[in-house]
Image 1 (cartoon, rainbow, N blue to C red):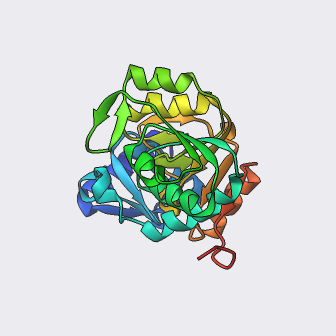
Image 2 (cartoon, rainbow, N blue to C red; image 1 turned 120 degrees about the horizontal axis):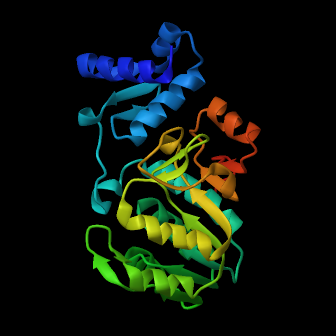
Length: 261
């Protein structure tokens, strides 16, 4: 059966039942689970469904992209866990750039706790507020048009301000990560900003909790081969983790036994 025929069947099943399971689809089409995961990732990228663990649901049943305040407590333990691990790749006196969002905020909290001297470039007002009391931190905020719902600055002025900088590492938080579709995001407003963070750094570091894996969003930032480090929490299934390792991705999972408290 061709991919287009599988897509049609999957969408029909979603209309009728509201959800599909990877295992059942793989058995029906006599294909591998990896093939079905690619199918679902493609359809999610077209905003025709939402991937969940083990399958997919109708887009009307899935959670949309909430504003920052609503996202803050979602998967909070995962965000804290991966943030503690990501901080291990930061050195005292580093010059880094940090994306915006709830995961980025948790990462900034760890930096404020564990470091005394950093230079941080950001367009996030939250990141600025979380770090501004650190006397040894040099903060550079790229201004522009203020987006209240996300508490970030955006626009041409913001991008131009970022392009004047050079950092050792950019820490970027995407919407989705996939071996096939790469690093993707949902909101067009952030595309240029996050692409610019990649342009000004020596190392691209992706912070993605385990719920973001093997799915795709609308806009592709880069291929998975273009990143230098992928950090996630310890709840990423072992088979998915090994798939990324086998593909040559430098992926690190949080280890609760080694984390600081």
